[in-house]
Length: 425
Image (cartoon, rainbow, N blue to C red):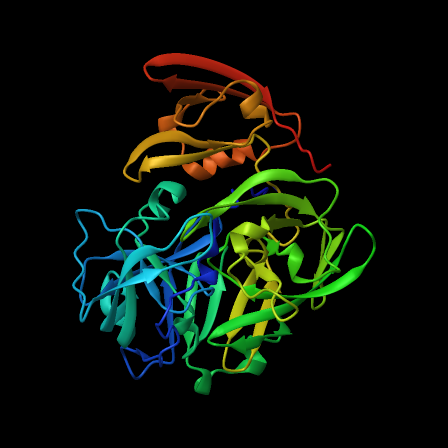
């Protein structure tokens, strides 16, 4: 049976983080807990394309962190009443980033210990000593609500500096390899090597895109495992970049300073090494939302996990290379939310789902659905029996599919019916 994957393109633009006055790229100090091993394999979770790993900070309770190669250090975005984390030498700072708002407050703490280990065997794993950690004073990103599972924050690119890191999205595993003892010839013989440019602890990749005017352009993109999209490109970063004529307005994501809006469109082709993707989805953020970034011919945007999930991936930051091996998702299509409404889970432990945004003029908007409506039934299925990926698989369905929904709006039960509409066909 052919697997069709429908994933909501939840976007984390934390790869564009701005931390004034703070050195993001401090020396990395991760080591295997057991010095006699040269590999450590760990099960991971996945939600909406993002890789989520267990971690502890200063012997804390178990935390869930999104693996985010687009940021430098570890960021704690939200803690529950069950989470206990002790920090060292905390200093209050101001953080600014993408979005339509201003700066927010955070605590900067240095000299912390981060353990990534098997929950059932704490002697196996890796440990980072003297690590910098940032703690947001408000849960700006509401990751748990957006992903539908408990998520406490993000762990950044410093994790990639000491090891080769292999990710298997199908089996949901991440592996850490000692580079000195790694047999490249044997392990990578079925992989394709793609050059990377490593700058300030982050990885950049060159991608050829064929635009609808048949102009081919090479763009340099941040390799960002904290973004669940395929590509986003800033149209103002190069005069040769054109936004496709057919686009659909979208709430692209959440930045440190507010929401990030823009449009989704498709280019004719994107090429990474020998791999070619026909009609991939590209997000173009509004210029005001990325005005604070340095975007030019040295960096045009980001490549996210809707591309990376199609491969078994091996990151080699020290060797400035990315190794790719296609998996069963390689040829899956590129989809987006055809309903125009986005849904969140109010509490990761309670299956209550609420509409938090509706795009004007979208199918959901035309029938009268509104932010704040609580989902009760979706296509005759009780909402409490679904997870967010189930819901998004319906909202990302085929053009013309009917969606039947019942919501609770301030105690009133309302029924709606609409058809999904693909405006990029």
